[in-house]
Length: 97
Image (cartoon, rainbow, N blue to C red; front, side, top):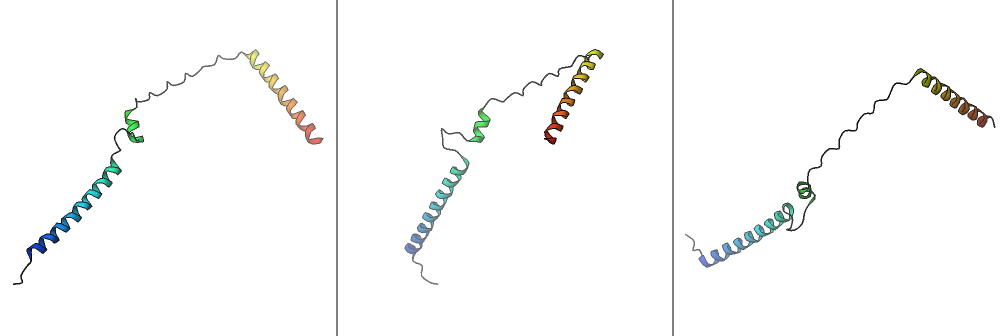
């Protein structure tokens, strides 16, 4: 059986432990930075949770129109006809000129 130097073995194990501890510290810091914000600050996600919920705006009331009398419809029909005739006349003159 070969002779084992325990002091050398112990030194190697302590070195390995120190490397593992350093790796654990690095990973822990990385996880803390990624998933937990520094104290005193808010992120978009936490800001949304802390705000009061916004109530939906009340639905707009539909406005029912009063029925038109036959006389009013006739006035509108004549006015619309007159407007379109003027527009058509103005359009034709601008194209011919």
